[in-house]
Each structure stands twice: as structure tokens, then as C-alpha cells.
Amino acid sequence: MGLSQLFQEPEKKASLVADLISLMDEQVSGKGGIGGIGLKAAYSAVKGVKPGYIQGAIERLIPEAFDALDPIWDEGVQKGEPVEYLSQNSSRSADAVLSVTDARIEKTDNGVVRGAYSKLRKSIKGDVEGAIPDLAKIIGKYAS
Image (cartoon, rainbow, N blue to C red; front, side):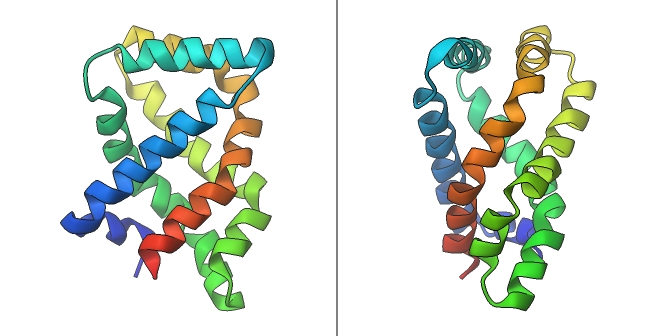
């Protein structure tokens, strides 16, 4: 079963989305310094696009992001520890997720979202890498 199939189960989908929103909120609120100020401002701008925008974005991105993470997750399953394996391969996992967001941002006609992403893209990989262990735990929670 591919990870994106987790998203097909309606009873899991709402909880999974809520957990991912919480993860994003925690990651953003925990950032400090100049970079944190920029990240918080951009996240706030994106959240302000319209009510529920973040939830909708997650719902649109997760199937593709999970498909991108599937090969890494499957390698971890082969080794018996997919959560740990995804975490240990946080750079590769972040690249997989960011390849999806990069492709999506190219297609968006929303200037606020495109501008916020473009300003942060160069520095965001480290933030995504830092979130991978928590993302892996969330995936593990629903994959078991």
C-alpha cells in the first residue's frame, strides 16, 4: 500500500490533515531570528489568503508528497524501521517533498502564495529537513 492511500480513507484523512496543520503551525511558531520573522510573516500571509487555505493546500499536496516519499518509506519498511529510516534520510525526504511544492508553485496563479514561497525557497530546505522526523512519526501513526 502506498502512502498516498492513507489519504483515501475518510476517517484517517481529517485527522491526518489536522496533525499536519499542527506540525506546520509548531514548526513556524518555533522559528526565531530574522529568518523566523520572515517565515512567520510569509506563513501569516498565506494563511490570510482565505479561510481554510492551509488545510486545502495540505489536502492538495499530500497525495503527491506521499507518492514522492513512498520510495524512501518503502526502503525503511524493508529495513523494518520506516519512521526511523525516513528521519535518518531527512535531506532526501525534504528534497522529495520540496520537488512537489516547487512543481505546484509553478502552476499557481496566486501572487501572494507564489511571492511568499519564492522569498523563502532558498532557506526553507533546512526547515523541511528539521520537520521530517515529526512528519515521519505522523505518517507512522497512520500507516500502522
